[in-house]
Image (cartoon, rainbow, N blue to C red):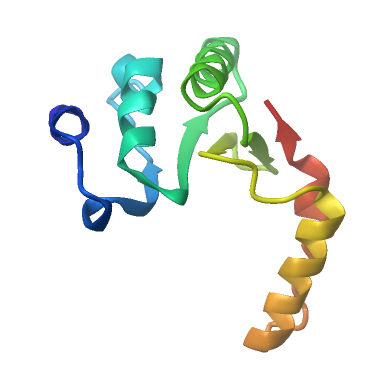
Length: 140
């Protein structure tokens, strides 16, 4: 947390910016600590991303306390990124993944599905079907 804040404050050069930042932090009570779910942290992360960079945050959900934390994290994502914010509940896992970009990365779920299928074919993962996952993808 301190490192991210210091890097954002000093103004990272373009060569020091990141394509992706993954936040997957839990404490002894199975919660993502509040400072990592708040807008100031996400605003710092936003400043450290490249123009097409993405931040992904894994949150535990499935009980009222955790669902409330996820709701507040969604609000913080909207405040920090303004657009290009999405939530993807993970089936049968008790998790929700939040994602945000500096700008929207796709015009529609259909366009993203076509691109994902093309990438899967190119990589030889022909059994991959993005449609069920994208059906759960929701803008924040």
